[in-house]
Length: 76
Image 1 (cartoon, rainbow, N blue to C red):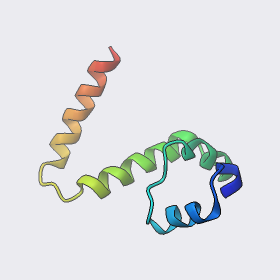
Image 2: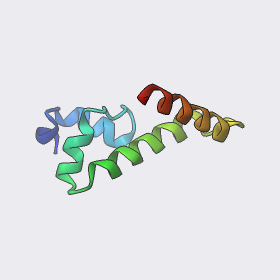
Image 3: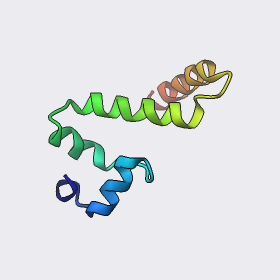
Image 4: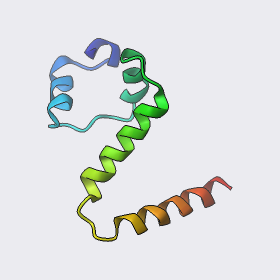
């Protein structure tokens, strides 16, 4: 897997253990390796990052709704 991601095995080990964050650039290769839909892999990655970084926040749901509005406005 490390060769397919173009990283060394020690870096892959750190990512697997959670000692190093996964890079966005790994997502497409991971979806290929694991034969998963890229949308599914990206969705899981985003959810994990939000939960890890903001999961304790009391007003998380409201913040996510506001972020969604901002993203939609940028796409217009």
